[in-house]
Length: 236
Image 1: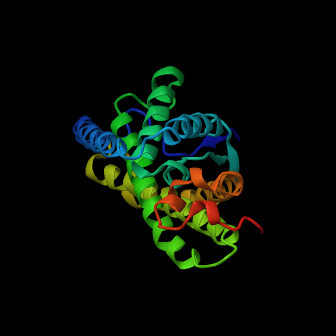
Image 2: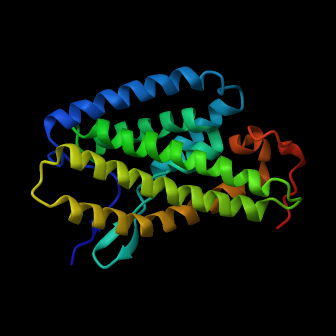
């Protein structure tokens, strides 16, 4: 059996033209807002970090990991980008990756690009970051924060992945162009993306902890939760 990549890269023809246009507008509006808000976050440290995050996510998305017979997944990167460079800059990083993949590698349909950006760059990033902020407030008082940060990164990535899959289900419910029933699509998307989210969570946790151990001052989540990043205990 050939392996089918199950990530959020929606191909052409999954949703109808009206729905594609609708979420194209949503994507443009969301990215415009992110670009406006990201200006406050981009400084001499954040700009090169954003470039590294985008390049890393682009590279890692090329690596697929098996989750079921005939099904594989890859990193979405929303929570990872949000934790490292913030939700606004992170959303822009993911969007750039998606545009390049779509136009140069035919990974995701052109007409579905707005929906893919909505799911992977906006929904996944902001849900992942929201979960990360809430959870990190529970562990930031610990002297040794890295184990707690790993759990935060894992859970936020898992939640962001499932949320992105939910976005796909909503789009399909609004204007699905395929013959597969909504219940079948929903069950398949949620089931497989819980498993993909576990893989995403592991990659995100390892990456975030590695950066936090070496340069905690570069981790956006740590800087924006009013905890001195330079005073973080990095022992595990």
